[in-house]
Amino acid sequence: MSTCKKLFVVLLVGMMAMAALPHPSATLPAAQPAHAQGPDADGSAPIRRTTAEIMTQQREVDVVPEARVAPLVTQPVTTTAPAITEAAAVPPPSLVGAPQTEGLEFISATRDDSAFIPPDTMGVVGPTQFLTHLNGRIRVHDKTTGAVGALDVSTFVFWSPLTTVNTRFWADPRVRYDRLTDRWILSMMEVAYTDPNRIAVAVSDGPVITAATVWQYFYFVPEATPGNIANPFVGNTCFADHPTLGVDANAVYIGVNMFSCDNPPYGISPFWVLRKSDLLNPATPANLSPVTGAIYGFFNPPIDFTPHGADSYDPNATVGYVVGNAMGSNLLTHMAVCRVNGPASGTPSIVCRDVPFASRISFPANIPGAGTPTPLGLESVGTRLYALHIRDGQIWGVVNTGTNSAGVANWTTDDRVGLRWFAINTTSATMAAEGMFYDSSTTGN
Image (cartoon, rainbow, N blue to C red):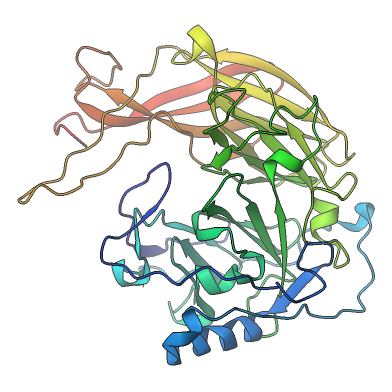
């Protein structure tokens, strides 16, 4: 944000990995259906609840251990608010970001807050608050003091309205603050006992998280969604892993890597366009798949791995962008860029091109831990992309790569992990700028 000064937030980052696994010493809550007895058990009704209701449930879990294994039953928040039309779904920014306290440093989360390896720590700054979302905890802070705010909850409790008897736990958190609608948008992946699994989204009703903030929950099952071709996953048991998150004026973009499919096999990385007007409508049912136009999948994009939507703060944007690793022989030499036409239409289309790097990238090795006994170290998570942003007609992003002491990716001399940063021109679909971020003096970094 343009008015922000420097904010230091200390997070327990841990490792980044394909999927989080419970810590060996952790005792996890047993999964129970949150709405097994309610009319919205099948997701055919909206699911909305306040921060106060969420925290009441959290206190029950904290005080009464048995509550961890009892059914987590909540009721939707009734609302008389009118449905938000598509035209009104993207209002101009209404808040000027409060400046952050210079030099502020605070601990947001520690290992005690996450029963997982890795914790997959994510965080984002809003107008007056900072929100941490990791495997195991969601916590909001005042960004001028670091004080914990109204929401301090386990991910088991926060996502319990979408928990089913098939849910083992929730993992792979993401979070955005959407400055175009002044909403917080969170997403997480269900890790299920049996495939397929769900991808979940929660949207706040305003910019400042208080006890009265209403959160609306949504989900989709990748195998059940409409798309640009006959759904190739129908009849298969696929696991949708590593969901990404991108937001612009018209839509929310979520991409995954599909594992354990019967036919087609692993190697497909689809992405979905979630129409923002439906996510902002209090009447939208929790299950997006049957809602006409609310979600549309691209099951066969020319992306080899990790499709990632690009965040854009342009209120007049009419197209969206999704970027991923290119396919085939271009895997380590190009990025695949897909322009999404008509993202608010309900039936968008894509045009994709491979954009070459000036020099190749390579698969990074894992980073070994120090000391004895041999620690787990850090997993490099391959050539996955990180958060993408559009600024002045260019898509800025970073991708993992192996590299040597000269900053050159080479199969035979790679001895450290680096980040290739890049800027792609959206008009010409060419690489406008790129470079390497790495340590030339230390191996294994």
